Length: 137
Image (tube, rainbow, N blue to C red; front, side):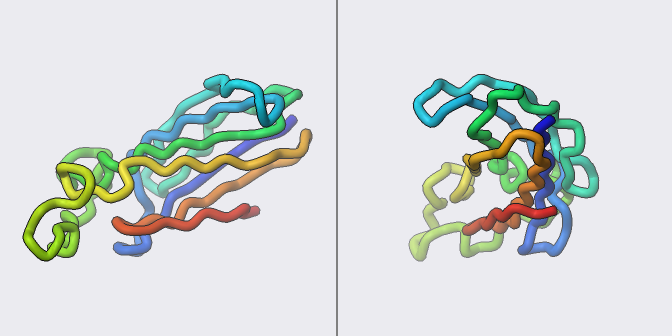
């Protein structure tokens, strides 16, 4: 059985990113279409522990993190209680970033190859203007 888990750490606050929606998709080959396979949201510790096991023929996995709502409104549950974006979210003329709400990355999509029978933990280190992912343990 091949499985996936993930967690998100907001590196700008040093806290887990709670309430971020995560979608899981799989495909059996690089040219094959993506098949939705599950969805979840990060818990208070920023973790998704309940993503379903992958089909036996899975070659590639896609995790899509909806991080825009997390950064948009700290009063919403998906905002994780973080502070609003700093003034740097606007350009030197005061105009918001590419997103009307000043969110530079409204979503983060990570695609990776898998080997049948292994577990993949894929953490996302996130801040308003950058992110990093890696294969964890």
